[in-house]
Length: 196
Image (cartoon, rainbow, N blue to C red; front, side, top):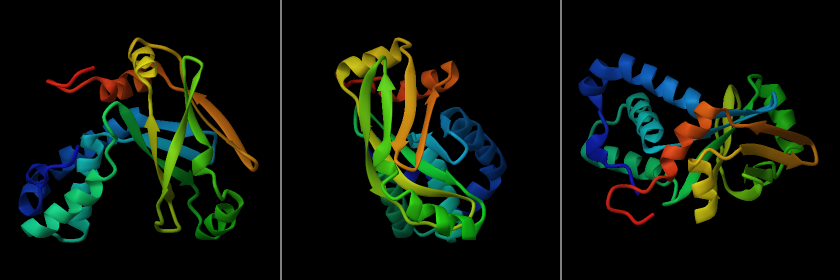
């Protein structure tokens, strides 16, 4: 799966649609965001969330040429979930740069400590590090979750889903709300023409 650069709005086209596009993206990310205690959150990504992020990146970097748009679409496309799996971004909710500098070393390896539990069955995250700005809710890693067919089926049918982190310095667990579970379940449905 990839992001099609032809679907990304740039320049004046994006500026005309930006207010509505940002409002839609904020609402979509709200339904896909799961807080893990007071220090971490996870946003389950979709083609729509990543396209919105790519459009904002193109705007901020003032990229409008076809080659630049293609490169940005390729970068964000790498973050899409594999078929039958889920992709997410792990954030540390720290707004102060000095605090971030002290927290990061304490939480080394935290991304590898994240897991889902679907109807009692554990799904560990595969983590890919991300290095970003040291202020605000900073992304720490991209996560991928490879679900089995039975885990996908249980999720889609409304099974209890927990997101947790178990690390020597930080532990938290959150049950996904019905809205979160249903929104993310759509990512687990086969696309038209695909086998379940």
